[in-house]
Amino acid sequence: MASAGENLRPSVTVTVMADGAEDMRRLGVRLGQTMGVGDVVALVGPLGSGKTTFAQGLAQGLGVAADRHVASPSFALVNEHPGRTPFAHVDFYRLRTRAELPELGIEEVYDRAATAIEWADRFPEVLPADHLQITLAVEQTGRRRLDLRPSGPRAQALAAVLART
Ligand SMILES: Nc1ncnc2c1ncn2[C@@H]1O[C@H](COP(=O)(O)OP(=O)(O)OP(=O)(O)O)[C@@H](O)[C@H]1O
Ligand SMILES: [Mg+2]
Image (tube, rainbow, N blue to C red; front, top):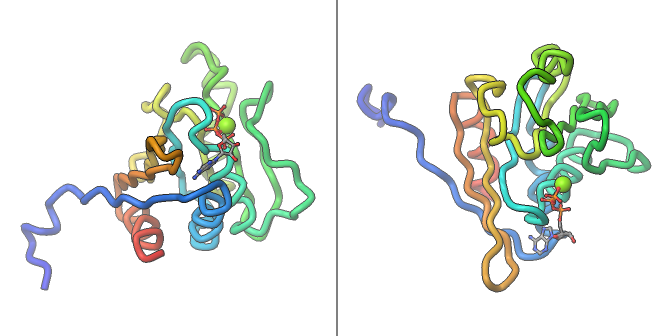
């Protein structure tokens, strides 16, 4: 049984391995099936670590049509895809300054979609208090390691879903 003290403890990081791009995508699907409007996943990791692959899985899990091209947003910074739950795919890679953020209207985006943000660590101050950070690392074997760090109750519920896969 959880004591009050336990509830105050910072949440534990969950680690999941993805063996190949298909596995990465499958993890995204699993999480996408659980996400709802207002949920935010912050994807962090070096070039080519699998952020977009994971986001493509999220899109599938959220019920975005298979013929939608889910790729890193290039000029728009935000791509919104209709789905069973609408999916907002954000990429901060090309965002240079904070000054560009207000015109992005990111808070309104959070309110109308399930959101994934690539390179989220570049502007952590625009993340909502409750979000799930997923840090991707490339292992020597090429496998990807996913460290899930939830920062609130909703994100904890999402992390628990992947911990069970
Ligand atoms: N778990 C995995 N194991 C091996 N290869 C993977 C895995 N996940 C993704 N890949 C492959 O890694 C490559 C880069 O993936 P992806 O484009 O998703 O990375 P990214 O983090 O979005 O890159 P960028 O920083 O350029 O946006 C792709 O060829 C993809 O198929
Ligand atoms: Mg990408």
